[in-house]
Image 1 (cartoon, rainbow, N blue to C red):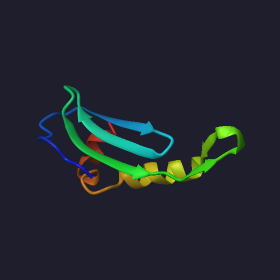
Image 2: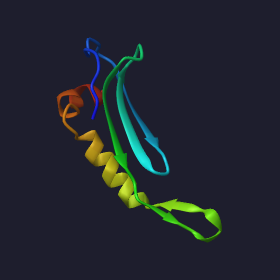
Image 3: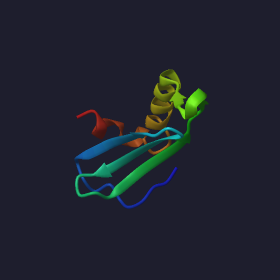
Image 4: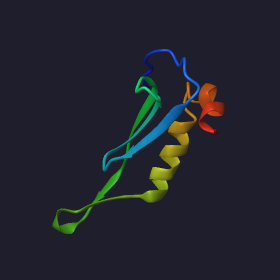
Length: 81
């Protein structure tokens, strides 16, 4: 978890980066200040021939956890509208 700056804004963007090896979630103000972020490692199945396949159910569970992480709950009302 990382937190920077002061919210000081009524509008926020909740951004998700679904990478192969990690989920990154950030709450930022409209002017780009990072309010809160989470990074959660993801399991990956390595396939024959060099492919990699994440599990979508694990991705979704990680999104739910990261969105409800400490710091997120105090901003939840701002996210909803």
